[in-house]
Length: 165
Image (cartoon, rainbow, N blue to C red; front, side):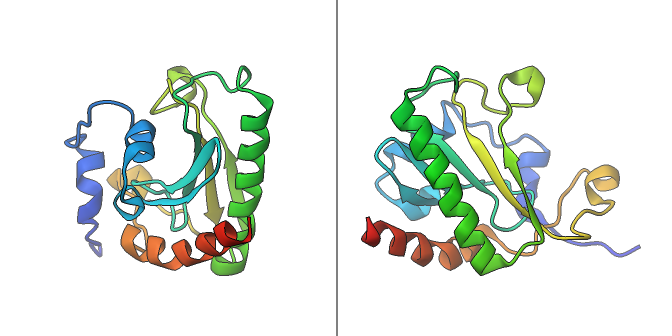
């Protein structure tokens, strides 16, 4: 058996990194987008990298407002989130060339939401054969690209979108 080192996954797997408060509210307040892995800021919501991605390019779109209920969000917020999801799809398609995508949200703890009180969407590029035995047997995912590389690769593409607004 071959062993693959993925030390950046340890805090997540061991649940060592217990952070206080909401990760989305914390990222929203950060002045340093790179530190928060924030790729794009809209008027009501923003795009950021998932700190513990399933695959390279795993994006999240979240509102600035700390709200659990998507269906009670204002139209301008849900419309902007839809636009940001389309933007993310477009950029990932052109830059990562995935074979498909998983796009969705988990509403409530019982539905798998890790952060149930601040709704957010996941946008995950997928490739044929990208799943393997590691998540089942080793309770670890092996990601071929670290977050800093993903951020450096995607940030300029999202910045171009900011200038076109």
